[in-house]
Length: 80
Image 1 (cartoon, rainbow, N blue to C red):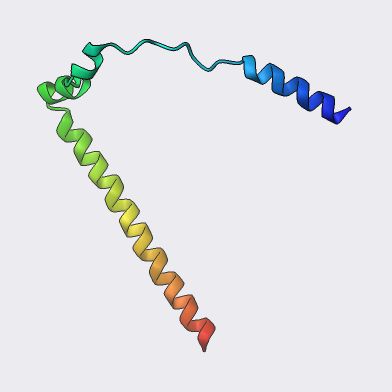
Image 2 (cartoon, one colour; image 1 turned 135 degrees about the vertical axis):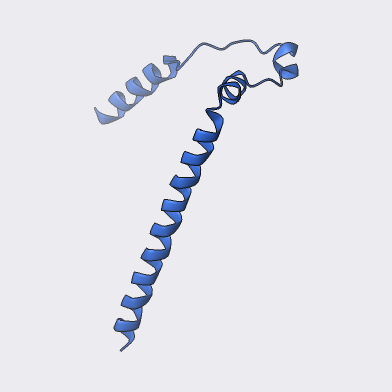
């Protein structure tokens, strides 16, 4: 019974499509504009975005350094 259910589910899953295929044209390869970045740059918001990304990466870096110090301290205690 499990075998038949598995086959049935596999057959139905082959029919599932996540999205329709869109044909890629030559104009898609020639497009070098990024409209979102152009709009954000013209409004001055790109600097806010870069600042937030910098703050997030700095926070991740501080977290990793603190975790490494804690692990090193625990390893030292374990060796003693």
